Structure formats: structure tokens, C-alpha cells
Length: 194
Image 1 (cartoon, one colour):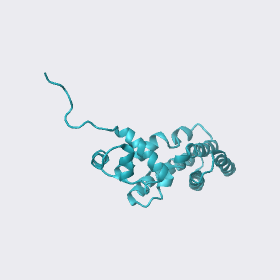
Image 2 (cartoon, rainbow, N blue to C red):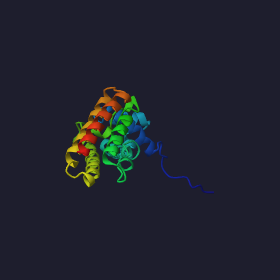
Image 3 (cartoon, helix red, strand yellow):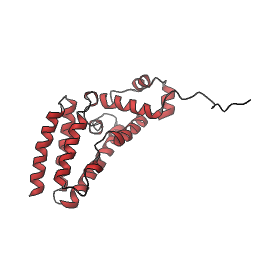
Image 4 (tube, rainbow, N blue to C red):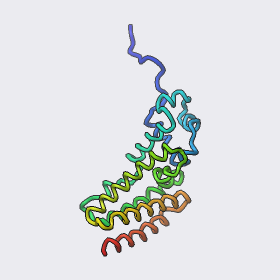
């Protein structure tokens, strides 16, 4: 009698669950403060299993960023729709940022924005690629109806979002972040109405 048992040792962890666990570590502590030993301990695996699954810490971080963009980032395509007034959509985006960034005190702020300041050049570039793509999406959205203001307005809202992220990391609660977002929204409405 034969069985169809798979050869070799069975995987002791689910790679997607591992990416979710690593995401929480990287988001809470930052890329630089999380070592391979921290990840393997959190996942309950040994270093060879880690390297077999992800190749490197940077390889895991790439997967974490992709997951973050899919599951935790502000849903720009849902908010910045062509059927909405630009100022209204940008105001909702800032409100969403305030809510997202303060949702969990352990993982406060935006992982992409905060990750763009890490010491590792490869990880910094990976986060910047996500950040630049978001900025381009915002700029392109504004430029359709406000081409002359698109560059300055994109810089303004992205700088505001970076400030909201930093304030959330420093412990500001959602109400304080929303107050800042709403003041910024008044400025957006004024500029785009001119």
C-alpha cells in the first residue's frame, strides 16, 4: 500500500501569515530595528527556513510592502474618483489618513512614509517607490481638473499626510489628527476655488 505523503519536511508556517506578522513588526519598530533574529523568533522558525522562504530581510520587506499596499494603505482609487469634486476627495483622503494612522497605537503612522527614512538603501528605495507612486496618483487626479495647481497641491497634501503620520507615531490621537486634516482641507478648498 502506498501513500501520497509529500516528501521532505512539511512547512511549519504559512508564508502569508508570516508576512502579516512581519508587517506588524516592521510597522511597529521600523525596518532598521527589526533583525532576522526578531523575525524568526516571531515566526517560530529557524534562519535557514526564513532564508528559504524569503531570501533575505529585504525580500521579506518587499512582500510586506506589497501586502501593506493591498490591505492597510489608504484606498486612493476609491477616494480619488473622477465623479467627485477634487477638494472634497482630497479632504476625505486626509480624514482617511488620520483614521488609518491612529487606528492602532502599536503600528501608528504610515509604514511607507516612516519606512522612507530607514538607513538601509534598498529598503528606503522600496518604500520610496510606493510613496512616489501614490504621489503620482494624487498629482494625476488633481491635474485633470486643476492642472496649474496640481504640483503645489500634491506637495501640500503629501506633506500634510507625512505630518499626520509623524504626529500619530508621536502619540497624537485621531481627534487631534482629524482637526489638523480639517484645517488643511479648508486651505485646499480655498486654493482650488480661486
